[in-house]
Length: 48
Image 1 (tube, rainbow, N blue to C red):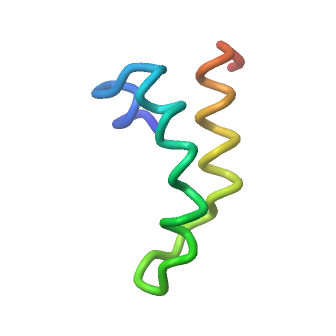
Image 2 (cartoon, one colour):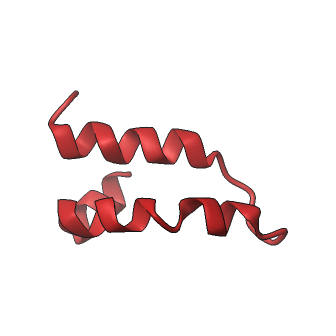
Image 3 (cartoon, rainbow, N blue to C red):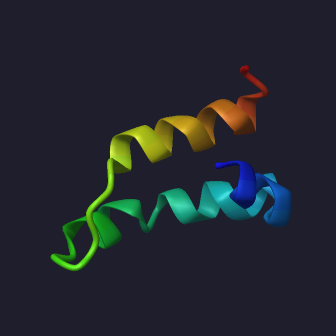
């Protein structure tokens, strides 16, 4: 998340949330979409 927040605006990160389920469904991607979504939402709301 640090790299993403260093290079992307909060609005861009929130827009990316819409694509997490699609990317997670692809067999060539393996990551915890729920965790990434939660981290993006925490950063957007200013939670530590």
